[in-house]
Amino acid sequence: MGVITLENEFPVAVAPAKLFKVYCLDIDTLMPKILPEHIKSSEIIEGNGGPGTIRKITFTEGKELNYAKQKIEAIDEENLTYSFSLIEADVWKDAVEKVTYEHKFIPTPEGGSICYRTSTYYIKGDAEVNKDQIKDVYGKKTAGLFKAVEAYFLANPDA
Image (tube, rainbow, N blue to C red; front, side, top):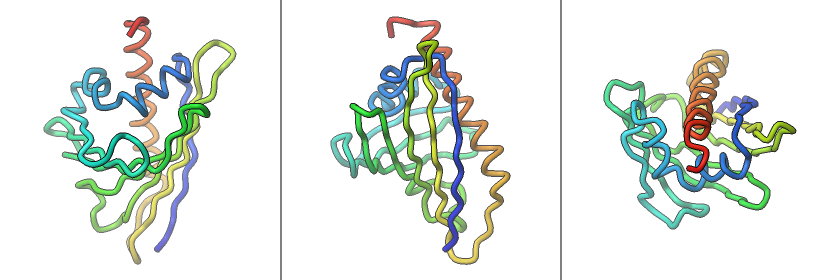
């Protein structure tokens, strides 16, 4: 099994605690509201929201993914760190065993955040996965997600 590790930084004009809350704690209610054109629903299907919890995200029709299941690996509200594994999805079924994402939310002097993310892709057997494609496509998608969250909170500062 091969492993691909990528590191990204995503600047967001939202305070770290608020960004952590929407991305890590209130994802089930806020993400479908913030990204209704992409996310149909997000729900816990097993667990209580802590480590070991399984979440299913259902995407709107016509997207690359129909659904994804995530397993929360660790969550630390005090240090604003969060990690989860993508354990099932209808993309890369034959190539990727799982993907683990580790996040740390750091304040910026301007009052916003930088989300540092390490993504580790566990490749099945001899399968081949294009690292540059992952970096380009999924890095842009995640940056877009954080920009949508930023736009939502800039438009709704009391949310």
